[in-house]
Image 1 (cartoon, rainbow, N blue to C red):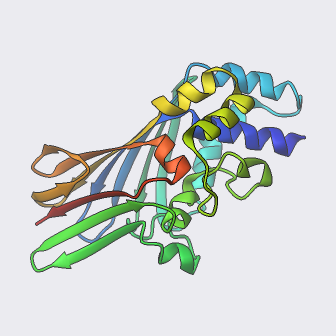
Image 2: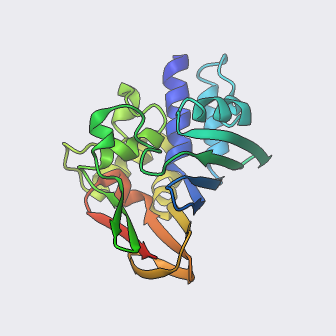
Length: 236
């Protein structure tokens, strides 16, 4: 019961938040990242309700900066993690990474070859492309907690299964109540990318300055994998 409850809690945190990540990318592909995660208003009460099913589970354990730091440092590309929780529903995470193409790769060959993040050189220009679809999901799934657990399988994206948006939202409502579907539809993953150079072209984003772009990815599209999402930036 403890394991099931913890999986549901971590699932709820991922599925019901807004996440903004700002990356400063160096010329060699390394960089630094600052991440802010804000939980939806219904998340903490739901966590407390779920925790009552298993008295041994501490709801704050999943939001512990120490636990987050420990988990992130398991990725060999990540270092210098600084995590904090200034508010009950807000997490701040800063870290360095060795190479952005390998950041989500770990060691699995299929993940490394998924094509989630690709950097190409064209003379004096570089093009970074982020592609989210059924084929690249193996790379993206590394950031979803407990994704391989059977309890999570009903809520997590499944590249081999077709499901409509309404069917998925019905499942979310069953697990998390009336506020769940709205929380999913309002959730967005925002990536601000700062590059070492001048932007000359972009796809699927909004230019913030000569060297910065913002990408906004609706969480529901990631969960359903029903759209080929391509975001790119070309710079020199």
